[in-house]
Amino acid sequence: MSDQKIDTSMMYAVHDAFQRDMDRFAGLAERGAALDGPDVAACWTRFTRFLHIHHTAEDTHLWPVLQERVAGGPGEAVLERMEREHRDLTALLDAFQHDPERHAGRLRAAMTEHCEHEEELALPLVQNLLTPDEWNAFGDEQRRRLGIGGAASFFPWLLDGADETARRSVLGHLPPPVRIVYRAVWRPRYLRGPRLPALAGV
Image (tube, rainbow, N blue to C red; front, side, top):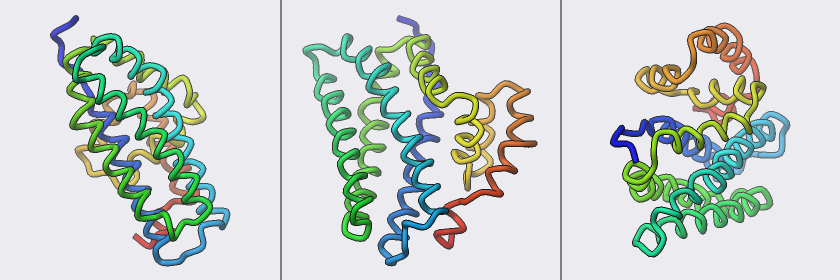
């Protein structure tokens, strides 16, 4: 086990983006706005795809590794909670699609609570029990599932509305040539497409 501190800043950035979009989808639903138009549907598809990739990578490359380290200890209950909350969120996402106005508040609250629980309960386990290589394997799995095409929309989406500190932190994880592509190609293309800030009136 390494004593090197693990950089979990990307987890916080991803959580912020999920909560940002969830707030906007819920706000649209609570105002009675139509969510079945092509632009909102495209934003929803993008959001749920990134959420599915993130949660799947946690389920396959993060929780199982931690499970080996916490077996029989108090951390076991934390991991069981994370897995249960993933299942609950999946069910609420499906319910929201069928009746957005009815389920908007519950889904928004569940998303916020899950992100908070991961940050307050699971990330300390990551810091105490994982090696940097094991944490990086989790990140590599997300990148593998995204692919280069997914990354082209993921990073502009992730940083949509982010402050300068967050932008510097996220872009600092990218190699310099990718940062150039992000600024010259990915972000301008993303801004030309459907975006929730415009659709949600924020």
